[in-house]
Every structure is written in structure tokens, then in C-alpha cells.
Image (cartoon, rainbow, N blue to C red; front, side, top):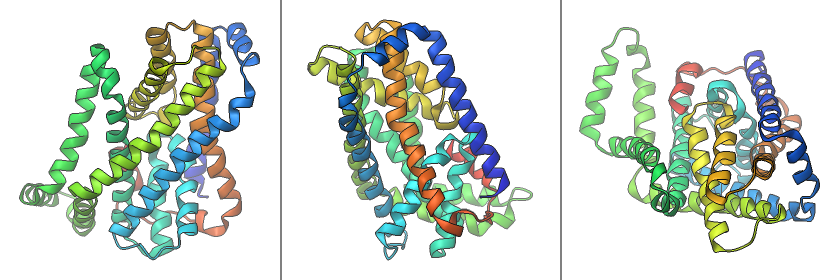
Length: 332
């Protein structure tokens, strides 16, 4: 891989290690260690099954998006490699690495970089709407979370709706293109918009959000199984709060713009488990570590495994039409 991406990935991994260490310290190392020692590790395959269920449905969404922008002929195995290889990019600072998926797609299929970035953006927005949908019941029961919920929902819906109002979108594009230094990106910006308009049509958006909601519910179930393994009583209330905690914390991690939501997501999960379920700091900390290892770090590990077996197609220097750093700010 290029040296810039390598540095960003290493920085993200180091930051992740520091977050884990901080969580141990904040939650009391002794208590967390005791909870982890007493955890029912026979539940681990079931927990990872929930994560794999999430990945499987999100891959279907990714491949569906590829077909919408004219890449339906890409073999599903190759498409799956591209999808999994993108997991480690989530922990790069500023999420700049996410734009590399567009670079790989361009090298693999000839898809314009701006169109590839649109697919990555559509993935993120549909995932955001999906976890918001899973958070509705929790927000109704706990109004203190309503403000953050409403702000994120409004921002995501604004992007979707703007993409469908062509006259307004073209007016904005015309204004941007008249700005000094941006006229050379005119074609790429218009390709970006046209792809966005296709992907965010009502039908595809509804299908993507439904797939995403089902996928993220799988990780919510994994959170529930972790709580059971730590001795939390079973029941519908525990299940609902487990799904709500993970979904809302995913939102917090995303809007924080931190790599992989590191730090923000962990604090949110631990805090919500303590507040909503009344868990002590040791149990909440152990549950947080387990769910992050079973979701984020499990995915990063799978992605790095693909990198080791992928060959030269992942090791290319990016040649985007729009600077990667600029695009990554949009994705963050």
C-alpha cells in the first residue's frame, strides 16, 4: 500500500490500542478483568455470527449499489473482496482511507473515482438511516437522546432530498464551478451528483435502509448475547436496550468523525449501559470491549487478512480526480 495510507492505518491502530487501554483504566482494570474471566466464552461463535450476518447483508447492499451505477457485471467474489478489504479503512484518521475503495473500484472496473466515492457515501448515509430506525423506540422511551437523534436524521435526510431536487442541485453545482480553482473539477462534480441522484432515489434508498436495519439488528443481537454472557438477566427489555445502545452509539461514533468512532462509541456504549441497564462500571466496560472486538476489530482483522492475499490491486497509489483528503472530509 502507499506510504500515506500505511501511516494513517498505523495511526488508527495505535489510537485504537490507547482507547482500549483508557477503557480498562476508566472502568477499573480489576473489575473488567474479573467480568471477562467470568464471561461465558462458549457464546463467542453466536456473537460473531451476528456480526457476520451484519456484514453479509451490508455486502448485498454494496453489490446492489454497484449494479445501480453500472457495475453489475463485477463478479460477486471480486466484489466481496473489495467490500471486506474496506473494513480496515474505517480506522484511518479522518476516514480518509475510505476513499481508497473508490480508487480500487476504478482500477478494477474503470468506474470514475467520483462515482465510486458516491457509493461509499451512499453506504454511510443508508447505514446512518438504518441505525436511526433501530433507535426510534429507545429515543421515544428516553427523550434525553431526542436532540442528537433529530439533528443527525435531519442532516441525512437533507442530503437525500437535495440529491432528488435537480434544479436546486444544478444551481448549487453552477455556483461551485464558478469559484476560483474548482472549475477543473466540474465534470467530476457532475458525475458525483448524477450517481448520487441514482443511488438516493426513493426505491433504492428504502431497500438499502431496510437491508441496513436488518443487518445492524444482527449486531444488536450480538450485544444482547454479550450481556447475557456477562450475567445480565434475559428478556425483551434487555434486548431492546441492547439494540438501542449499540445503534445510538454507532451514530455517536459516526458523527464524531474519529477513526472507526474510536473513543466516542466506547464512551457512549459504556455510559448508556450504566444509565439504561444500571450496570456497574466493570460490567459495562467488559461489555463495551467485547462488542467492539466482535464488531469493529473483527472486521479490521478480516480486512487485513484479505490485504495479505489480495495481490497488487490493493497496493496501488491513488490517482483520484478529486483529492482524497477533500473527499474524506465529506465522508466523515
